[in-house]
Image (cartoon, one colour):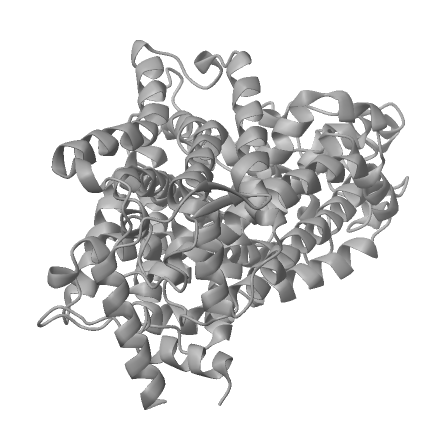
Amino acid sequence: MTEETVRRASAEESGQDKQTPEEGALPREKWANKAEFLLSMAGEIIGLGNLLSFPYLCYKNGGGVFLVPYFVFLFFCGIPVFFLETALGQYTSQGGVTAWRKICPMFEGVGIASQVIVIYMNIYYTVILAWVIFYLINSFKSPLPWSTCDNYWNSESCHSRSGFFANPDLFQRESNWSFLNNITSNDDFENYTYIHDTMPTDRTAEGEFWSNRVLRMSDDMSLGKVHWDLALCLLFAWVICYFCIWKGIKTTGKVVYFTATFPYLMLFILFIRGVTLPGAADGLIYYLRPDISKLGDPHVWCDAGTHVFFSYAVCQGVLTALGSYNNYNNNLYRDCFALCILNSATSIFAGFAVFSVLGFMAHDLEVPLTELSTAGADLAFLAYPRALSLLPGSSFWAVLFFLMLLFLGLDSQFVCVESLATAITDLFPSRLRRPGAREKLVLVIAVVCFLLGLPFITEGGIHLFYLVDYFGPSGTNLFLIAIAETIVVSWVYGADRFYDNIEDMIGYAPYSVLKYCWMFITPFICGSVVLLNLTQKTHVSAFSSGSWVSAFCALLVAIPLLCIPAFILISLCRNPNNMTTPSKDLRQIRPHKPVLTICNLVIFKAQPNRSVDARSDKRIMEETSRV
């Protein structure tokens, strides 16, 4: 039997894979197979941002040129941090908090900070799903309620426009348009030019459906009353999330077979339909037309970095939680690179699906594409629904689109809840890793987040939503957490020691470029972006007004960041002699090797614990003899 086989067998039989549970506690679960892990990871990182944000950022920041800063950030920041967090979870078999406690107790606050970001996401991200469900229900109506102006929520200034592609008969010279435009005779048609004009978004049929029917905003921006229909949609979203993860990865691993793959089928159908529409080519050219001058704009680089971090779900503890359920010898190096390729390819492909339809819409309405290209909520709930309403069989395409949005957002959401539940369970394993405890914990999380989400669906809830979205899981927070993570792993725990841990898991050492990214490149790039962001003035009045707004925004940004120094002080008070000492439970294959070297120059020597080394050597010898 080869040394490699013995090493792998010993790791699988004892190592981190077989941790002894506390008395009365259930053993920690593992993925049933690699597919469950890959689909869960894909479901988390491939979400609404791939469809709603990337295409807009691409056209806004120079078309195809935007791919240059995007891939620079991806290769030197996104992939290194993505791999680091997943490897940390698999190595320690712990969630997003206790994993950091095990490798460096004084930086447990890094894990707490990432969980605060997850809490933000769990509260407000589900509100988007509530809106999607509301639109999905209304998509079964014909005509689509956001395509006409004869509804009770429409104002007298509302304007709608039937498309030529779906209604060519209306555009014949002898057609009577009076039922749409209050034109009393056919003679007036020659002088009527509104069909070639554009109107403010809030006066269009889809704009008034969004503002007057869905949001029902108050004039004074006060929260006002909760909209009961949206509250039911929010409740339904949480019920789905709960039953997707209530039994742990046993249910999560099965659900993702559908939720992570079905959106691809719908996206492909929408893509095929989009590229066959008239005007689609103009939309695709507009999407990728290169503008070299944009490379000199620092804001383009900031947008690229922020999108990469959001899209790859780094600095949220989610990757660590999902990786912790892997077997110790899973080849996560290959898995992570495959997932990164899939994520970026999906973003680029989604841009073709989006802009082909927007190109058709501009062609059909005879308006410039610049007036249609929007991102986020505007794209999901205004531009794209309007484009679908111009198609024959518009209800079918609307149902397809909002089903895709629902599944894209749903698996990202319940994986975030899974991350929080995993982190809390690993903090209190003796109490929460017992029969029935898991279901109760997830129920408490769901109920609390549902109640905290109700203010977002009030009359002024949209203003609160934008505040939390912009200042909660902000790019600055994610970049600073990434800086802390890379510094802790490379300079405190030791990049060479972490490389040895990875080699022990997968059987070979990764390329050394990752090590130097963790040590120098990633912290430098992230720090530069943070400094650039700090030089930009963000006026909170652009989102909402009131004396409480500035304080609320400051708290959103400060709470996760303050966790890091706070837990350093706590560690200093608890055990000042072992603030950087890794847990004795962690497997070390080269305990006497320097923990950090640069070009063969020793930076930090090993500080082995003799009793731990002896016990580890004895355990490995016993396992080898058994094999």
